[in-house]
Length: 388
Ligand SMILES: Cc1cc2nc3c(=O)[nH]c(=O)nc-3n(C[C@H](O)[C@H](O)[C@H](O)COP(=O)(O)O)c2cc1C
Ligand SMILES: C=C(O[C@@H]1CC(C(=O)O)=C[C@@H](OP(=O)(O)O)[C@H]1O)C(=O)O
Image (cartoon, rainbow, N blue to C red; front, side):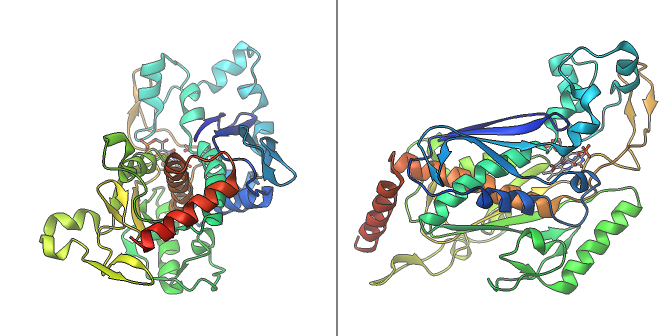
């Protein structure tokens, strides 16, 4: 199972093609749209999210609400494209337009300068269009298909905000409560304490007022993955390492932790490792879950607890100093628009990229072309584990 994405931020659309999803799996468009709309929410987003209403168009691989086993292609149209047709069109553009809109001022923290140096682009729009996190809409669409598969296999996954600008979330995990506030709306399954949520929103507003940006920490929890998914036998089959790669591949993510994560460095082994227990109902289980559900590159059967850290958004209204690649002069340009904080949206993105990695590992372990057979194989495996 794999996927690719294509598309520029202000181009016509972003697209994803997913290959390897078994046939006969129920899948409806609304499931994907729900994921896409969640990704658009959250306090701190800029004007672009008011322009876009991300809805998926399924262009292959699904018929009458079921997967066909053929590649699934999903398209999300960029509503903003209508404002960029002269700049983003495939036809050569008039010289005067070109001169007016060429981007020569790289932003520290974004891909602009390194991308220009690597690909030889003197117009850094050719870099920023693809390096933009607009691409995460396509990744969420792909992840939503994976999430849909996992949910039908009894595996639930949910991302939520842990921390914004140093303010820690106290998360209540009442599955029924749905907050009306703007950060937890992106993570409806886990609800933030209202007071803390307000503090986070105030911090975002303050950063915006100061022309600055802020980052944070998000967490993804996965429940229902049986023990032994992934493998210890080769570096590239270790599930925790694959998840780490996928998380850090999200725009602006700089680190990942499993369970207590970096705190493990400051504790004794007896305070870190999870003791093994057994009962007839559950089979083997752990009394604690400090390692976040992974040992030896494999799942332990405990909930997976994965954190990702997002740096502050690099495009600043109060910009940092940089150098114009044409004049070589230093500049401090003002910008047109940007998010000041995208941590809530990033929690949704992380949830979906993690879902894809887990679904992929499950399909490698239980390779079935027909979804009902996959479901049966997982049920049998769970029973095997219980009786082990
Ligand atoms: C959901 C989301 C929204 C983002 N919005 C912006 C934005 O409005 N402006 C910006 O400069 N960067 C934004 N970023 C971050 C940049 O895309 C990212 O910093 C850039 O691609 C450079 O990659 P790196 O930070 O991973 O090195 C966003 C990231 C995410 C996940
Ligand atoms: C478009 C999305 O995020 C964009 C990610 C982004 C960046 O530089 O990463 C810059 C902004 O785009 P624009 O320059 O058009 O305002 C964000 O809005 C999205 O999340 O769908």
